[in-house]
Image: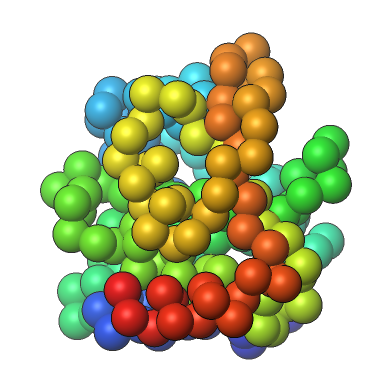
Length: 184
């Protein structure tokens, strides 16, 4: 059974668990080289590979941890525009905030809006103490989103054979964060 906390509504977005029907749209999104440029996951893959990743990784995370990456729709459009969400990284023993959207939805504040919702989910519903986010150094757009969400640069690591910057947000800093989350 899917965790009811994984259904989130924001001012403009419906954030929900992935469904099998999202595979085709997710595949189309990943065909865009600009969308895949900073993902570190190999970029364009087959539809079969997207399906495997959603079934094994996303659905597997829901089952194992009670949360994972979530599909995002604009209210009233009833169509997949990308994903957001928290993912437990077993090898790092950390929870990672991630997001990816179709290019036509970039620059509209959707990553920030969905990220706020996921931070609130993590701290207020899942009881997390810390959330990290990993970003490639050249991904200025994602770095900007993380800074708007009050994440702070923590360190550099090698992830998927690439240099990545790790940003972190601690629950203990949530008092000042609440103001940021409500006013942005």
